[in-house]
Image (cartoon, rainbow, N blue to C red; front, side, top):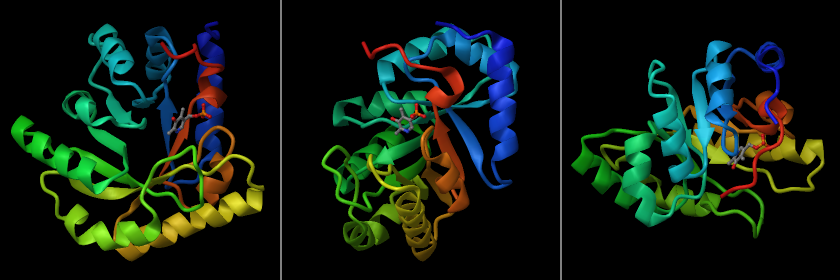
Length: 220
Ligand SMILES: *Cc1c(COP(=O)(O)O)cnc(C)c1O
């Protein structure tokens, strides 16, 4: 189901009005047709998040007539997709291991690319999610921060399901504290259900899909 474009434009405008000045909107277009991305671009949105390489590459090809957009990879990144992800995305939010970071750095150097990367951190036990534990991230940080040509710009986190708003706020604040300790400024925190707490904790990228575009097509 495609929503009328005026409704999408209104949702975008309402979200932008609700976000504090330092918080940018990453429109998560996974599971949505290229036509909706086109409508969002017409309404002034330029940064889009995708989780699957093949789907994103097809959408980017469909939208090749537009000015270049700002594509962010936010999904679980399999090692064998690293080169493709580097070619199709300027920012990667989901770097969840030292091994993956090393691989991305090696391939980015071969490709002549210097992507912005955010390291995914797991601040509460959550069997459904990957990510660095804070202690592990601190231990790896000297190497991660120096892995040229990657640009280590920030941290990303996903709150586990079932937390109370106050618990989510505390989790996002913990992520902000860790980023400050490590000396990085970008914080990718908050989705459709919890962006308010994330924004309150200083998120610089809220990743919003369904609250903007409506329900997704099931993944292929
Ligand atoms: C799908 C996804 C989102 C968007 O989720 P919504 O609940 O639809 O806003 C945000 N972040 C990540 C990592 C995702 O995979």
